Image (cartoon, rainbow, N blue to C red; front, side, top):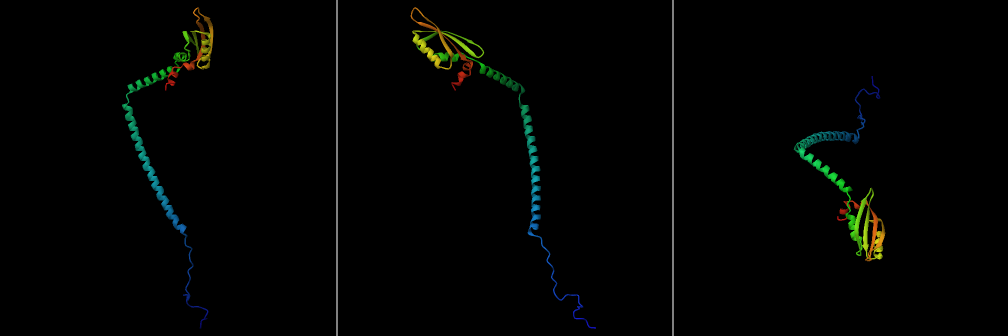
Length: 198
């Protein structure tokens, strides 16, 4: 019995068998585990750092709290009460000085703006809610001096509506007159006397 030449009796192949290539993972799949591991390690280190930092802050807060408690114990309550009382008195004095008025600016104005040929013999003032009214009696050698004095007062804004009147001539030839004017209370505040000197 002869065998057919096409029929092979051996199960061992005569040709080499080619193994099909299996698809290898890309490089990206090799980098991904390394990247994930690095991120995990960084997250772990960061959480440990935050934990340690929180503990350090808690200790510092406790230390500052202890220092504050110690400082509170050292404060003398009687000295503190005295300082509070002094502060209250100083604030009250400041409030009084802020509203305090003085007639010194009126005299300074008259000294600066009265002509050499004019003299005032009487000064009266009355204060109301918004302004101070002043009444002056004066003397001079001529009506020209009175007119010049009226012009001088009118040119200044310190006096509001100065009115000259009550003119009379004495036996010696001197002219007597009166001046009525008002001054705003803001111009007479005590603190303004120091504002110009600073």
